[in-house]
Amino acid sequence: MVAYRYRLINSLVWDVAVSELSPNSSRPKPPPLLAVLAGVILLEAIAMLVVAVVLLVELLTQPAASVAGALFLVVVTVAAAAGLFALAVGTLRRRGWTRGPTFVWQFVQLAIAVGAFQGQFARVDIGWLLLIPSVVAIALLFTPSVMNATRRSS
Image (cartoon, rainbow, N blue to C red; front, top):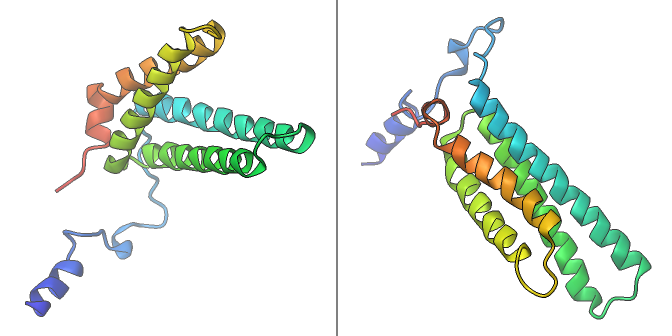
């Protein structure tokens, strides 16, 4: 049983041998819609990083009701930005695992956008800034070229 699993781990089913790639071979360009999707995710990551910086500046310059809570919010925002950067890179590298987290992030962002349109302290401008990239990214996720580019090969 162990020998069988060892053979599977070292087989080409699981990975591509490095020696098969020539040093002068260039990777094929990603489909244009995949590059647009990665760009949208990258812009969202940059926006999250800006939000983290703004929160950190507010933490350092304004009195906080809970310093630990404010610091935690900064850390979570930085972690979300890092995750979005990883999603953008993974999307450009045509990784299949990126479709699920990208959809979940866009769906959560869409829900926040809907909430930004409502209530006593509604911010329509923020709602649109969240809604438009979410709708674009979700639409791009389900285009045939993006689906084929990020499909796992078996």
